[in-house]
Length: 271
Image (tube, rainbow, N blue to C red; front, side, top):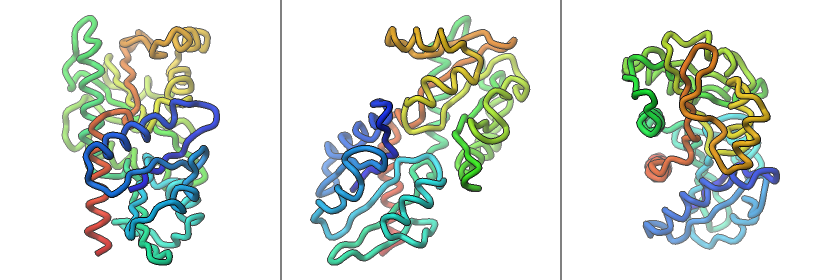
């Protein structure tokens, strides 16, 4: 198995979840080999694939959605030209490569989001933990105009969460497409808000960009990060709302199980 992350040369935190989940999968001993690979940093995916000896290789994109990179650029660069609901299959010499769907598209991500939303409020219950029905829940994604599918994973989860009828309201908000993260305050129907970054890592977008889009001054964000603190004090009073901001979904330990479920689904669909 290869866990494939985007990677970054600017922020070391971006690769952390890939290494953490790969280590957990190695400890489980279910695969002959579990490797980390990246698109934007070493070890590069092409290098790692060239080193593997197993006859069957599962490539799991540690991405939130089937967007520009995970759904177009990377699979095409690796030689995959079709992408099914279970993933894509490619014969390379005596090997079969199976490119799974992005981990964030799996139905079990709903469980991860609910866990994140519950934990951040339980951890910081000041003045007391509100009930879910008194919370406006926001799933914050990147979004981009370069791919019409970029926000699909966020919107799919929003619809599932709305159907559960647990929270006062549920919305998807984005960095680079409508509705924007800054619009969360006007969309909220309750005084309490929980914002969950639907990202794999606590990289620059999660630790800097989104807190500032939510209204935290850049100076305060940078001071908190310099001091080794989370950039958002939970909860923070902002624009008449009491706002909790969680860590990214990719840092949730339960994501390892989602990776295994994604591989099982891909294996069943490619027999």
